Every structure is written in C-alpha cells, then in structure tokens.
Length: 415
Ligand SMILES: [Zn+2]
Image (cartoon, rainbow, N blue to C red; front, side, top):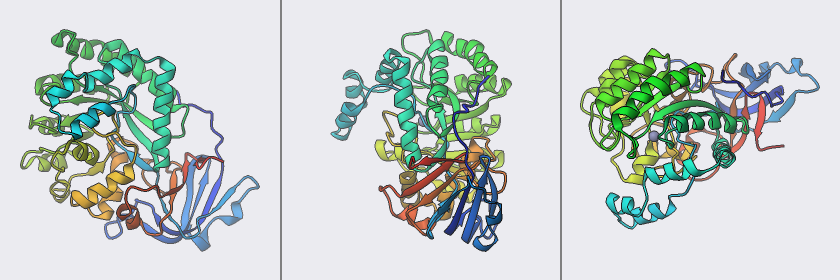
C-alpha cells in the first residue's frame, strides 16, 4: 500500500487581513469566488473557516495558533500542476544549445541527445541521487506556489525500472511538503527491446503490479509519431481502466493521431498537449468531461503552434495548465510563468487561467479537496506579493510567492 508520510507538524493558522481571496469555489457570476477583506482559518491540516475579516473565528484561537497578517495581499489556493515529468537524471543543456542554434532532430540524436540520453542517465543514477534531485525539483515547485503536482515516470523504459521510479517518487515526496499524484507513463517504445513484447509486458505485468501496490493513480500513454501507435495506446489504456487507474493521453502534439478522440471515447481523466487538435474534437472532449491539460512551456521551447485554448473553452471543455517539467522540451517548475504565457499567447482570460491551475487541474487529478479554499478542503494556500489576481498573470518571470501553506504546514518560507 502507498503510505502517506507523517513527518510533519500540522499547525493551526489564522490568516487575516487578506486583501483579495480567491476561493476558486464560486458561482457563475463570480467563478473565482473572490472575497475581499477576508480571513482563512486552517485546523488539523484542513480549511476550517473562510469569511469576512470581521466574522473570523478569532475567539477559537489557541496558544498554538499561528496568526499571519496578510497585510492586504492576494491569497489563493495552492496551485495544482496536472502534468510533470520530475524524476530523471542528467542534463540536456548541450542539446538545448544545439537546438537553439538550429540543429535538426537527427543531428541532436546523432550527438547522443533526446529522450534516450535521459533514459541512460536515469537508469545509471543511484537511488539516493534520483530521490535528491527529484525532491529539489519539488522544492522549486513549492517556491512557485505549487502544493500538488502530478508526477510521471517514463525515463526507465523497462518493467522493473518504471516500478523503481514510482517507488523513488514516493521517497522524494516524503522529503518535501508538495503532495504528488503519481502516474505510470508509457513514454516511448524502448529501441533495444522487442516492441510487441514490451507492450504486452506493460499490460500484463507492469499495470497489474502498479495497481496492486497502489503505486500510481493514473496511467498515461504518449501517442505520437516516434512514440506509441493509436492501437497500442488503446490497448494500454484499456488495461489501465480495467485496473481502476485514471487515464491520460499525450495527444496531438506533433502529429494528428486520433488520440484525443480515443481519450474522449475511453473516458480519460485528461488529455495532454493538443497543439494539433483536429476540428470538432473539442466538442467530444467537452462532452466526455476530459480535462485538456495544455502545456505552454513545450510549445515555447519547441516553437510549436500554441494550443488553441479559446476554441476548447468556447466548446465547454475543462482546460488546465501544466509545466510539463521535463529535461528536454520544457525545463521549468514555474506554473506562474505558464499562466502568463497562456494569457498572452493562448487567448485565455485571467479568470480562466486561475481556474486552470486550481479547480480544473485538481479535477484532472481526481482531487476534489484541492484547488479551492472552502471548509473541508486541504489546508493549502498561497500569499502573493500582489493585491490583485490579475497582477500575478501580468507580472511574468519573477518570483511573487510570499508564503505557502501545505496541509496545515508552513512550507515556504521555512521558519
Ligand atoms: Zn509530457
């Protein structure tokens, strides 16, 4: 069984004098649930009370309650990143420099770059090294306001190696306050193994083992040219569904494969990328309730076309935003930067951007108690060096996170 580490001291908090509070739990005419001059009370790791400053439960303070004066600042739910690849070793800085100087994919491959170079480095790194580097990434997520992140495997490409990465993710999680939602990723077919046999073992051995040991909440397949075919994707996802895992699909990033239609048909929790989403498919995704996890960092790095968020939102899709944090195509832990890119380049309003990194991202992870500030939700919140939620989207590329509380723990800055 997957165990939640119990190493943390959970304190009671009273955060008062909040200038603008986004509960992200609002109604149609105030979808962000904006409250002004607000107070939030956290008890036993959960949100206990949200209200106007003068109705706060000050009388219930105990000697152990930590009182934080927000001094009129913006307070939001902890951010939720629904798409990351955080466990890997090695650096692809040389490949990055080659690419920005115009090298082709083939040239990069011939110089030893690409996913397979990360696979080699990851498989030869020792356990402690991987745990430490992954925990360091989670700490950087935290400093950017993220309190819950999805985390994919995918850089082992062997049955035992992928299981190892899931177990090491759990160890990394125990070293940081950020909560994670682990995903088993079928990334690319390993070039040194029989492809058919690998897919068969993934389905018959790996997925049942992962489900039995509760090591991953979801299974994701990268369906594209150079990765898995639509038929292989369907077979892997069907097995994952039969084993009670949530489903995700990397779809329509470089080529149009029909993976987004498959995601809607099979009831995937989320579908990732969608730069090349085919006409009308957004309607299928909206009807299925599949969250569109859009990844501006990958489009920026690889100079792809921006995902058409506007088209998806107008069709009624749930749209979330992720960093896609990975060593090749999007090396960033800054979800706030993704928020700025989505507003500036993808036609999303500030309101839609905030919902995309809170409520919608939490929905993609099946965590209804995250991404909102309301009684009973997780005791996560962020105080910002801003007084208006739109400023965080406009003021890009600089750290604006002042304070992060995760599960009733003061996680940043550390005391
Ligand atoms: Zn990805």
